[in-house]
Structures are given as C-alpha cells and as structure tokens.
Amino acid sequence: DPEFNGLVVALRHLCNYMKAKGQFFLFETGQETPTTLLRTIQAVGTGNLGINLDTANVILYGRGNPVDALDVFGKYVMDTHIKDGFYPTNGTELGREVKAGEGLANFPLILKRLKDVGYTGCFTIEREISGEEQIADIVHARDMLRSIDAQLAALDEWAKDKTVVDRYVDLGISARKPITKRPELQRLLRDVEQNRVDLIAFCKLDRWTRNIREYYKAQDVLDAHSVAWRAVQEDYETE
Image 1: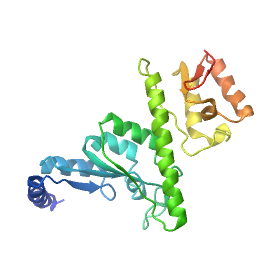
Image 2: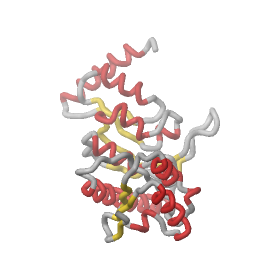
Image 3: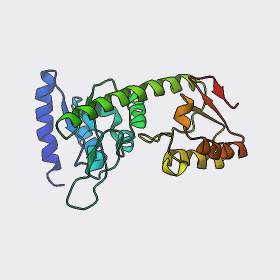
C-alpha cells in the first residue's frame, strides 16, 4: 500500500504524544487481517500501540478466527470484547452476530490462549441488539465465561504434570446431543482411533455425556483402543 509509510509516520506521532501522557492507542480487530495489525504495530514501534480483541469481528469480516489470530498478535492484546458470530455468506454483507456460545468463537480456547500470552486485561461483553433479550444474553455470556474459567482452572491444575495432547470443547452443545451433533467429540474419538490419546479428562461426568446410548457408543471406541477417562471433580474413572 503506497500510503502505509505515511500512516506509520502519523500513528507514530500520535502515539508518542499519547505515550507522554501515559495513554495507549488500540486497534479493534475487524477489517484488517491479523498480520496487517501486527506489521503496523511493529512498524510504529512506540510501545503503547496495541489491540482490542473483538472475538466476533475477525469472524464477521471473514478475516479468520480469534484463536488463530492470537497466535499472530496475542502479546499485543490489551483489551477484549466478548462477542460471537458467523462468517459472511455473501460478498456484500458482514456475518451474523449471535449470542456468545452460539457462533464460531471458541471461548475456552480463546481464554486459554489469552492466559498463555499473559493477558490480564478486562472482558467487555457485547450484544448488538436491544431490550430484555440483550440483557439476558449478556448475563448468559457472563455466566458462561465464569464456568469456562472454573473448568479450565480445574483441568489445568489436574494436568499440570501431564502431557496435554489437545483440548476438545463442544461449546454451547448439550451433552445430551448424539455424537453426530458434537463435532469436537467426533474429533476426539478420531484421535483415539489414531492412538494419540491415553486418557481423557473432564470436570464432571455430565460434561462428557448425558445420553446413555451415546455413552456406550463412545465407550466402545475407547475400549477398543485401551483409553480411559477420569472426571477430575468427581469420583468417577475407568483407569
């Protein structure tokens, strides 16, 4: 872009002025790719230029997903907006914003990646509607984040001296659903079949399944590959 160098000069001047006053300038994720944001921050180089991670905007603009974006610019995230949505389905409109937990933002992985890069900032919950439904959806998102944080902390504590292969999270999908409706459980079972997993851990048994028929379908795969499971917050295990 022929205007990039001029933009960098202008931003550097602005950010140096703000730095002298103890202020920061944050880009909100959206129209730019994660790489473009990273390149700009590094080019300006004032140390007070960062990112406000909007967990839906990267998706709504079709620029990627927030988990992968954190691999690119994670250490520069200084603020986070909790929001969810789907990719665009045509070339002229943004994707559809939805209640947190019902879209494509993988909040357990987002929170884990933010923790890994040392993020200590705020979480602001957004819902771009109005009225009582907006309030209810914000409360839902708050409770979801608290539950995710507690479950991640419990699992991390239990697994601190173990090798973690991966995390599998069917966010917003009831454990009553059949395996065919739980893509992350399907991915886990494929990894079991490829002998990548020795032990599966979850917080409580009702996080694993609430459907007896589906329990035995999954258990048949585990038994065939000598894989055990453990509920780390309950006295249930197959080891």
